Length: 328
Image (cartoon, rainbow, N blue to C red; front, side):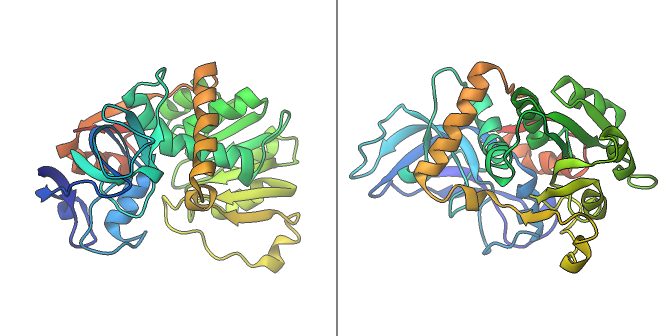
């Protein structure tokens, strides 16, 4: 059968995104045919398009979506036709499509209380927030944390969840409107940071009586890295998990001693979803947080799938807040 999907043949701008008719094979052993109902949208998709995150070419695009099982291959017992499932990650990038074949081992069954749009918006960003708050640095009641891009997709989830845990949340944003959005979603102290002029470390120190935060969660990278290190307390943690402004510079470890010996890590989702059991455990924790009302998923931008190039331009231009989705 045939379907419509985005393909890229060269790294570059959105002009490299080609909306094409592609052939979809029958599902093989351990696979299902999945009809997408909602496709997730992530800043990392733009990194792969530009080549910042290398991948083989030619290739498809996107690796998070929700859909309905349309057919099952030989040996499939865990799923049946009509089941609703979602996925994040995987070895192929075929999410920007109307349908695809997927390995059963990569699929997450969805609970009835979560609709498709919420699930597509929540899964990748929510599981990212989960491993950052639960494992990369385990946030505890009474902690103070700094979340960069606090009004973004991962940021809004982290602010809400950390507040529910009992932490005080400081967040950086780029506009006053984003500051208001972050504050409505659990960020106690939003700081508006301009690309030029004073940054945030001084304000963070003021808000923490000079001590600094227990953990900095930095998804921005190059532009924020030095001040992130200046914002953490004695033996605190600085977690980088993204490169919105470029990769952070290499840190001279000897120089971190006078900074209070912070623990520094570059975290990646793939290292925290190393098995189906681990992925399902994190998804279950996210679903519980949503059901309890600790985390509310804000889908603020919806685009037809064929307009994914415009969605990329909006994300790169910092014109989005919360979650964005693509509708096939």
